[in-house]
Image 1 (cartoon, helix red, strand yellow):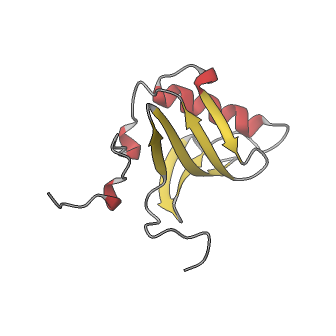
Image 2 (cartoon, rainbow, N blue to C red):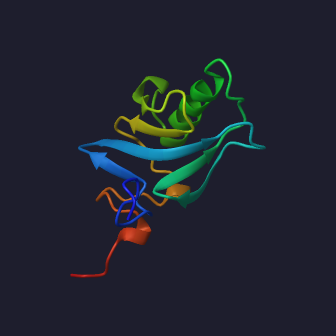
Image 3 (spheres, rainbow, N blue to C red):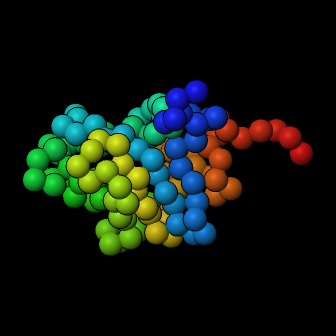
Length: 116
């Protein structure tokens, strides 16, 4: 297994107390803003803004703030400012978008087990 791979590549987020950390891959200049598939442990996020002069990052923050119903100041790019691969902090999300199928226990749907 390569260093960048995890045991379960479907887990693209985790919780730190009430804060959510998303591992994403940004696709700028898309036809519309949307969440897409999960690959290599990252959720693909498509946005319409171009990747110039910080426009894509600003647009991403606005999009995520709207989706999670938080102020834009509650969305922070933790790493990947100049990369398509980013770690995003969403402080105390008020809504969990259905498209992401998030679980407050920290495991994505594909990673959950049925053990009791």
